[in-house]
Image 1 (spheres, helix red, strand yellow):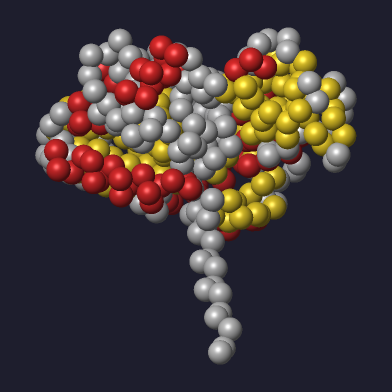
Image 2: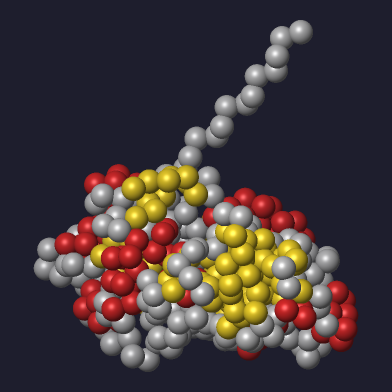
Length: 391
């Protein structure tokens, strides 16, 4: 009998900035089905550029969905544990999609766009006046999220569309990011709070090819620094990328994005959380609003965990030596394996090895002495308060 042939691997997707990223020296690697830059000048250099100045990331692999229809927020409320009515138009919140077991399908940001028409936004192409939300979701979960959201929300009259299309999503991050964006847009952004959002038109510089382009701006990010996420049409996004680099903003890759978010104690889907972990187990209890008198998928499980406690918890670890804990490494307590590292790295800002790990609740107290097995050796580690780094 002839041996079965393995199906060819699907080609990696590329963002609209792929060629520009490669031209800027991006070293490309596979990530969540995409070909993405892991670094440019170097991880540590890019990390410090964001902590001390300003960096820009191509995050166009992320999914952006638009939900439209009367009562869109109320419909989405049944799928998340956070009270979406704590935010209003022009505001956003971080939350998670849950399954029936209280496990996390994905984490996402929900932007409340209010009751709007095409006249409210030059990027809007639907003339109907109705409620609108934008959701930014993870690349690896985008297809599954979209299908599931449609199955849950379309029967309630909510339409779901890809808002990004072949557009560009950029993250402009660092203490200099507000001044950079103010110069580009010709507006004062002092009144735009964290998780606030609005649509602007770029003024750019005299040579800026992105001038006049509409851009959806959210004061959000994944680095622990101030900054913005910018959604633009393809050509305007390419022009803006080139303009930022020409003006000295550092291009940054996935490597620095990971060390920055780890220092800030931010979760990565597939590492710190997945469909088998609940928000209460992984330190996201602040997203669970059980006082909200509304049903949502997974609520019964979270109510039970809230009353009885959880058997495991996500903790921050600081290692004593220079050995680096990596995802999946065993965590030891009194010499016995009890959990595993979810993310780990050398911290460029702190000059020490840090990690996040899932361990039994009894080992999760601040100051608990644990160890991580690295290349067959038990490396001492202590549970510390998160985040590791604060701006």
